[in-house]
Image (cartoon, rainbow, N blue to C red):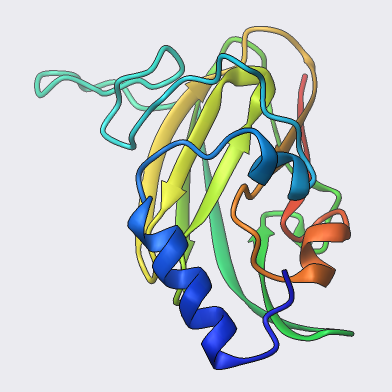
Length: 173
């Protein structure tokens, strides 16, 4: 969906905002550059899914790797649209890399006025990041390979259709 007018953006924010914290799947995900599996886990950032780990109060362990991501507006041929920016920079096809079997903590800071998701169908992972909020979650990818991530909430035609902005990959070695 192209964010051409404030009324369109407002409608999109009300629609997406009403479902914040829920898993977006099916037609929305397919329209956003990723296919959602039929049995995607319903999960929250609080940690109630197999990929989520929540350290206990007595735990002194820390993740093997912390990845900081930011969602902020960038200038595109379609105007100003939000995009993920990671350690490999804006527009990087590979957002980050990590090691198989090791816990990865991801911290996403959303500087946009609408919600976004960090969705990885291969891991059953789908975390909603609130508007102008921060989400922190952990996962362990047990096998090496290339994993595809995407935002399951339509937020801009250019960023949704170009790899490295609202969809892309990360490598697990």
